[in-house]
Image 1 (spheres, rainbow, N blue to C red):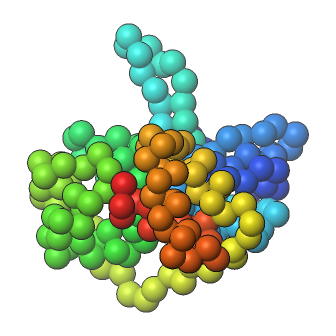
Image 2: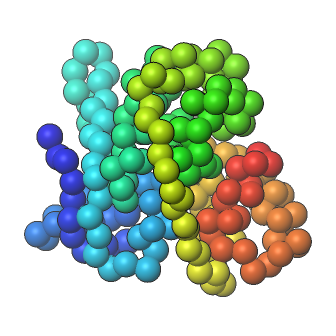
Length: 198
């Protein structure tokens, strides 16, 4: 089992990184939270959750999900332990909210907040709260996400949201509306705002 990867980042996007580990490039799927934390780095350590894909009762491949800190990995793994919540939905939640916000929503039984994430309906929100409330620990302090705006923010946000499963035309419409209000928003801000409106 791979616990972590510590190496050079050779490609970076809001949805995945490619890391060079001794001449081998590993593609690691990431959340927006992790993207924000590694944005200015050329090298990083990611805590890895390995998801094995099973088709017709045999292994058909695997996906690696990487996290900048252990708390985010822990939340991800607890989320996918809930019946009906897959890795893509858990990553979507961690791209919409910070790990501490998810913990707080579960502990305070904030179904509306959990349901606001694409792919989570009323039944799933109730199940997440019921199954995880006793497993989720309380956290103190805040994680500050720093963001740098640049000219390709809109394109990066568009690509990331399409990769997360949203329809391109719908994403473009929302991004146009958001950038009309503030054209200087960072990739992270654009994606977070779009997730609220899609």
